[in-house]
Image (cartoon, rainbow, N blue to C red):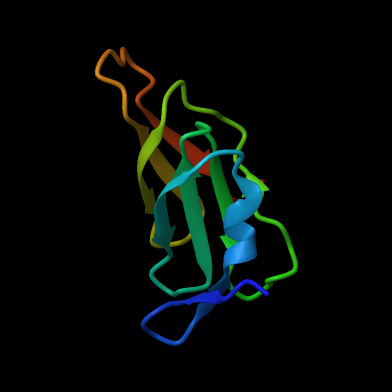
Length: 102
């Protein structure tokens, strides 16, 4: 059994969902209301999921980075995820805006 990751407000995230990445997870961000989470990793992908549905696999955001995802932010209305990559030579596509409603 995989133990859940417990958030300070008592919300939990089944760590099985973090295994959706094909490589290590670098960053995990929760929405302000605690209902959603986004995470990114060395596989250059950003995933989006709900803390309330542990049986549903997180959705993979459409755009992939060219390098490791290094930071994330979620908009106050939970409609967008902002992701940045770790790339010193980045020329224009360092930060992506992902639509969580599609």
